Structure formats: structure tokens, C-alpha cells
Length: 216
Image (cartoon, rainbow, N blue to C red):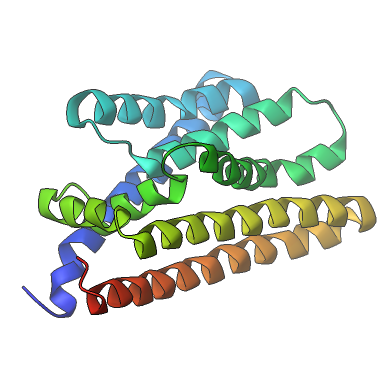
């Protein structure tokens, strides 16, 4: 199947996966607040149950890492960590960016390993669980163009997300709280959307370049 319809099953699968990994933890969070305890810590721990169990299932049964579940889990873990930092009200304004800062650092740390973290995200979103697509994606890693592209994408996400965290901290300590609450959602949204658009366009140009030189 060629043309726009070729990617529709993958898009539907990814949309369903994202919906599960966001809606279920959110539902657990609010149910905990309403039915069990008003404790923020209790609610966050309960919300982490689904991404943890899903990640364990993916690793033990399918031998693949679910990056969407891991992203959700990282966000919950950083929120829990922020609760233990102290009662400074400014920490509450910074807390939402603890995740982006942590993910940005993880991007840079992943350069110490054989493959950077965005290689696994790219494989998950471009190939899913399709064996043939995964084989083709894996083969691109053996191409110098493909390896360089994965490292560039990882570096860009690292710079964007650590930069977002640093900028939020600066804003929190220089602007009044209402201004921070008004600005930061747009800051995070714009940074993420623009980086996603750039990533897909860059990945397309890299695949075309690999094809022109005779790669997969």
C-alpha cells in the first residue's frame, strides 16, 4: 500500500498508544485524589502504576521498550522528586519543567552508550512492531549518514529541552507568578511542536539522502 494511506495504520496505533499512556495515568491520579487521599504523592505514585506495568510487559513479552510509557513515567518520577525538594512556591512553578530538564540531560548522557536515545524513539515511531520496518530502520544505523542523523536529532532535543528548563527557571526568578503561568505553557508547547516538525522534516531528508547514495 503506497501513498498517504500507507502510514494510516501506524498513525492510528501511535495515537491509541499515546491516548492510553496519558489518559489512564491521569484518570488514576484524579481517582486517587477523589477516592483515596488528597496527598499529591499518593496520587502520583498511583498514576505511575500503568506506565510501569506497561513498560515491564513490553520488555518481558515483546522485548521492546515503549518510549511513550517511559516518557510518561519520567514525568511522574520528576514530579515526585520535586515534592521532596521543599515548600518554596517557586518550585511549584518550575516543577513542570523538571521533566524536560531531565529528558534533555538524558539525551546528552545517552551519547555515552552505543546508540543515542532518539534512535530508539525514531525506531518506535517510524517502525512500530513491524519486523520489516524495524529491520530497515536498524540497517540505517550502519550507514554513516544515519548514525550522524540520530546523533544530531538527539543533540537538538537535548539542547531544546534543557534550554526550556533553564529559561523557565530564569523566568520564575525574575517575573511575577501570574506572568510565569501565562508564558510558560506557550514556551513549552512552541518548543515541542517546532522540534517535532523539524525532526520529521530532517528525518525525511536523511532517508532521501540515504536512498540517493544507495542505502536502505
